[in-house]
Length: 80
Image (cartoon, rainbow, N blue to C red; front, side):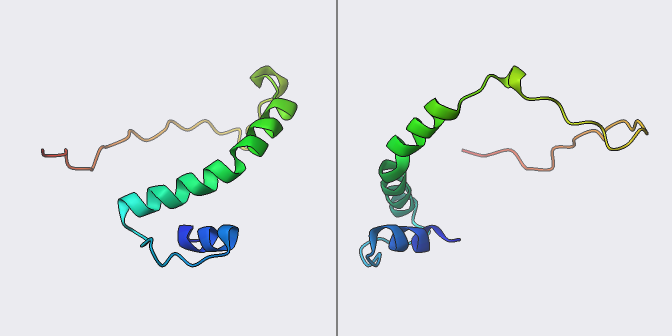
């Protein structure tokens, strides 16, 4: 779902002043959404937190051991 649609749904208003895919406006929309739900999310985390040791590992689906392919960086370096 697009950020603009989520913003319009949550705040019941069109984004006439904000334009999607403009970095500043995208950040403002995202911050408004986070600000609205952050207290509830933090409360949920506090009530439902578990140590990582609580979770078991998933069994391997295959008995065949394969070596992973080496990762090759195909991105060009940034130029400033």
